[in-house]
Length: 118
Figure 1 (cartoon, rainbow, N blue to C red):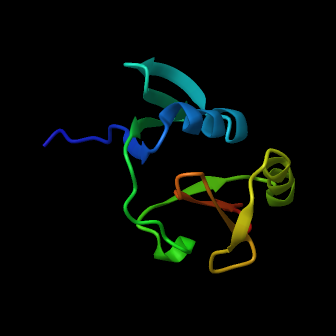
Figure 2: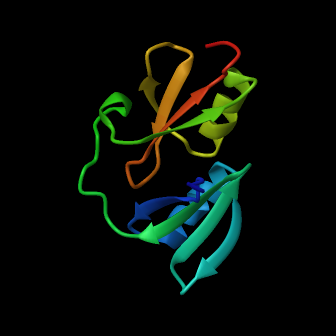
């Protein structure tokens, strides 16, 4: 079988508004906007399509969410400060004080961790 990973699709209320968070806060590259409201973004080798939709389940915590995205950094303190300066509100930790969590405006959960100090 010739099966390989394609891209991730995130269902968001307003893809153009969500694009601003991913581009301006998380520094994703905007690859394309299709049909005025399908936004293709990329960070490193991960490609995501922000597509119109709704999430019928918004988890109150990271560990109860259906999906979590994990970002690695080599300097947790510095990256935390930079993201906070861009408006990210951290929502606590996951399993350790060195694993910080936050959400986007659509309730998608993220974790920030230094993989070498975890």
